Length: 196
Image (cartoon, rainbow, N blue to C red; front, side, top):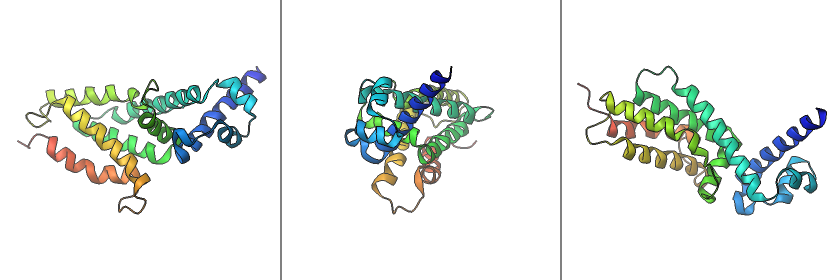
């Protein structure tokens, strides 16, 4: 049992190290040597757990998806308004992008390596789509704002707030969560039904 626990700790350390290295250098700049050094494990231990960089990247994206899915479910539980729940979901995901290197690296890998399955957003996109359908049924969406089109817009918005801090560190709103807090009200105003 002790060996199994040690193996699990090594695997966790490798996923975390891969997230750190990918977050700093992207997929193509991340080397297995750098990841093994960051995890403080030998290359033999790394290749015992992950046969290739691609396999390690897949495990990282799966972990990011699980984290995001769990947090997304918690964020929308008990929300009365589906459209407000969408806003809360986006804020939680943006905070994760700021605070959790595994989620941030998983998101980056989803853009750099779209062939990795499942993408990190696969765990929360169904919740988003369900909420938007509920918002439409409740009359919360503007006439003509189709849930599928709004879901696409939301995906673009989330990608934009994740990428912005990487490309413009001097921007006026802090991190992905700050950008989401500032931008979501404008998007919501454009998609929400006019008050009766």
